[in-house]
Length: 418
Image (cartoon, rainbow, N blue to C red; front, side):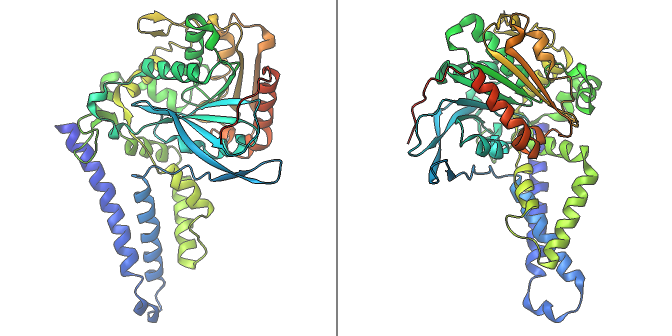
């Protein structure tokens, strides 16, 4: 009951702040206040607008918002995100492009389950759509999953990826972004031994903690500093009565968000202060740079408690992937069994979450893979976000990834879906 009451208390705080913002905005927006020469009224209304929007976004799953793309024929083609393989904890989503010719690149983009929705990769999807047939793992918010659906830990996550790869077939090129990189590597190794014909053609790992100890960060230091008992007591809550997953133990998205914000508190504080000033001056817009970023960044989802705990325990503390001792259902998963899937790693020189060295460690684990099938890239000036969604991704990394895919593609035509 304690965890349930705490979860509801956190939600109460969120709703209260949203209400305070809405009230301040409404009260200070009456036309009569235009007669009062006091900038504090405009500032309060602006504060209320930013406050209301920010706290409201924390409870809403963003839409993909990808309605069309322009292809080389100069025409706009409608885009439809369709669920092709529904699962209780996450779906396989395909971005169907209407009236597009057959593609030679079929990509599975593995999104993180780390507190944000898969839509965090919206810009990544948009950048790949003109050149690839794109599929994405769309993980569900744990608070919306009934307790009857059971548990979901790192082994279940790995088996989901195995099922998604099998569904897509052997012509697939997998790109794993950040947190899922170790488990995607494990899923590929699992297929190498259990179902070699279902293996993807290539695997690109972007900024993932394959070996967290290779280059420690604040994230890895935290994982080593706290005990599992402390995590269970301080980080986990039980979903309240408001949601379909009432009673499920989760790591709340709001708690994860507070950790993200604390890591760069000064930067976020400055961003919101500047946005309030822009709103007060009438210089802000609904879709300006600040709102585009924070509408996505503030939209958080809960993780299943067992997934969060097993990630910290097995990936960070015990380093089972780094030591090649990971098991699924009691069966060892040997990364050395990967002998035909080309593997590329991408790291950012200024990544403060998965520092350079953590991801490239995957190549040393692939002992059965010839050097001709291995590649790595370090983007010197890119931070964590930039290596998959920013300017560094668009201008430098994306072309390299597409070249890597082409180098390991048999050019099998992929039927276009209209």
